[in-house]
Image (cartoon, rainbow, N blue to C red; front, side, top):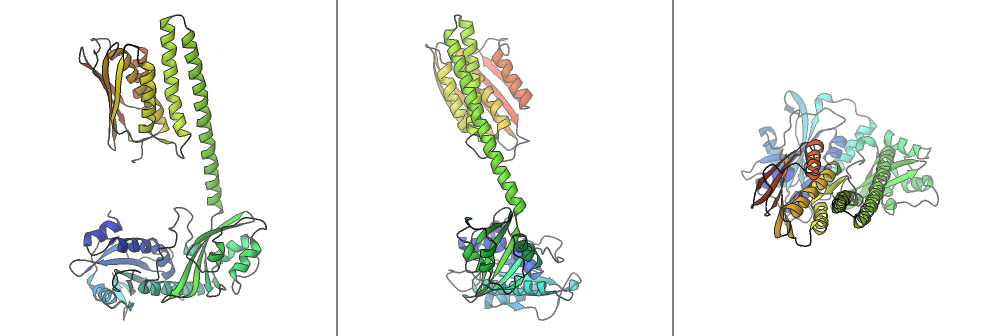
Length: 492
């Protein structure tokens, strides 16, 4: 599906600031649809003097008119003249009589979208509200207030006062919605309306009276615990003076607030305050933070313990009296150190995914220094990119590559100068890694007999579900190819 930016750019008549403005407006589409109890559609002009839909939001508290997605569709003939009039006049245009859409009576309002700072005063698009009259019933006081708030916002859209680019963007989780709770403030910050959900949220925080007729800043001051730090932006939010967000916490309840100042041609006339009880979400976030800190501490301690084990193995190797024992302990030390690098990386991040290019750069430096014999000079280099991998992939892959590079240095380049190249190629479905050296190569029948090779096979085939293949020619070097399926890894 095309994004709003793609659809707008395709028309070739809007600038970057226009698109940012439309993105902000589309981000509040759900709020507008819920306040208006109607479908909201955003249109932009096309090169053939028509219009195309680039955004559509259905109401959550009323029946939708559009059961199929209309984003990307050209404007229908029955709405074209009304939308054109709103676009070229810069005025809100209401349908003169009920409009029929697929045998359903509707009422359409066309609102010109004006951007502050545009070079000309002409609109950059049109927003339409499509109200389903077939679902009409006697409106409640809440529905009347919601519709009044929607009308105020439509007027602000037509005058360039909404959206406000200085307001923070919506969080991914826990953003207040109109159905969660709505408070209407007058210009002095007095509550003129509070929905049942909004009143319940303040009651749970300790306020026992009715909100209507109260200064919301005084109510908030009353329920806030003494000597408790609070968000510095809170006074601006509860007085309705700034388009901002803040949280209130009292009696173990956390309520998220979002204020939208209402203006009439730039003059503030009041505010809408959206509320949502986010106690459960905040508890979940705190638990995730605690668990993340615990997991990182575990990785840090595992890394420290592995480094201690590697140091002990190194000491023991130096004291060994036979070359065979010294070599076995040195290889064990190298394997433990490679695993420690992965845990060290995981202890520094906020997720259980690692940048394997960074991990392997550290592993490669460690292997090249430890594996090289006195008469061997190995030049190692990496081309391509591994990308990010989950920890369950990173550890066995780091250990397997440690073995392959070690074999290339110790056996392929033994007693000579040469190159070891590691080539990584990744697509959405597969990671291919080739380890290539230009050493003497291995004789036929010698591949796959050592402990290191058995370890690599177990890691690649058993733990990663991949395949591994050796290609060797005596005197021309060796190339090992690893293919690892990425079907269980989310794309980067």
